[in-house]
Image (cartoon, rainbow, N blue to C red; front, side):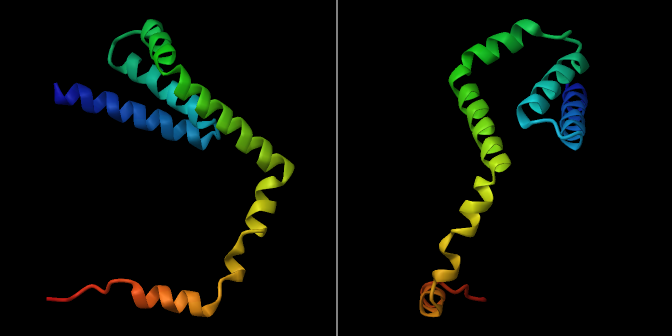
Length: 110
């Protein structure tokens, strides 16, 4: 029982890693890993389970898809670089940094 589950998990991890190496989006890499895991578990392509799972989590899937689309649009237009450049890291005074360090709890060695 554990051997078969370990093999299926290994196949899914390997397919996900290979998909990410080929620069597939996370959503497609997860879909490929799920389909290959079903094949490795001798369940066939499991189209019914994939369709039911996608319909069950439709709201979460829409959030992931629109967030991915939005971030890719921001990255392509240069908006991400603009936001990072305008972050207030440089405006933090040395006094604020030192006061945060003074308030941080120190670990005790026993």
